[in-house]
Length: 386
Image (cartoon, rainbow, N blue to C red; front, side, top):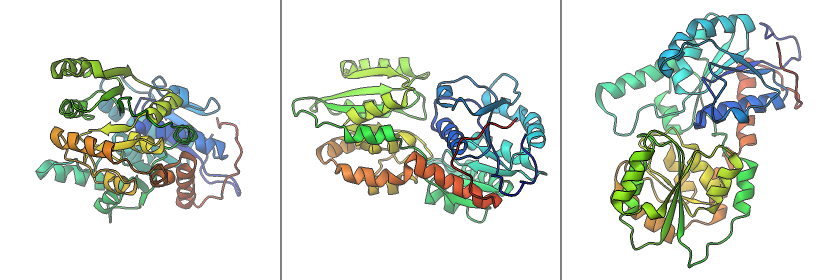
């Protein structure tokens, strides 16, 4: 059992809170972090409301997983109702750090740790203020994020813009997104040049929801009948039927393949390594893992200005500047230009180097060490605590 007050020489303990192992980027980061801490000898547990989901297979079998009791219903309301159970677990198991996987759970984790010696660590996984958001709604959202940061002992952000917005609101750290796997690097190294007679290979990855706005990218591609292209859409979600109807209405259905959710990281890396270009037409993002993954696999990227955090990465990778959200005409022009002027592969690799999974997760580890003043753990697997 986790205990208050570490004996001399004992590594600090961490409980990673994740609602469930879903198909989003924050779910994968939380699981990878828990796995990494375990492999580095840190006593760590994964606390979840639900243990089933698309990313469940990524959880290290040696990792202790505890259920946080939760009622049914909508996720946000269910998480709010979890507060008494989570607060009781913090007081029972006494982790040194309680880590929140992303925006929706940051307040829950901060409140659950109040009045204890447990350090609450939140992670900003989506924009603090969404692109185009103005007025009272934007102000209220910003104040809410600042208030949660003040309640937390540490808040992790993914871009300088977010760090500036939360300045003076507590301990704010900019850390790389743990995204680039060895399989992605191998996929990049194994890329083969496209035959000049073959169609351009385009890819979209993400849930088929309004946030990801695949509809804008499809409208953009319909403006490029003079280019020989084929598009694969990897993802599942409620808008699939709508997007299929849109493809038919635009006359591009024979060029678009709906591949469904691709949960195998190696299979996803292979898809990205086969693509000339990733299309990222999102309406809002925190930083966007798929964009980093595609660049790491050697594919170019065309993206919207879904977050200010995206600009420096696109510039470092020699990509077209982000285009305005929802602007199909500008998106089409960016696709055509990027296909005509690809960046050197070495430039893509250099731009994503800091986002390598092991390198980035070691940054998390060192940050946690500094937060609790713990000794460096031994790099060996330790048995789970009970």
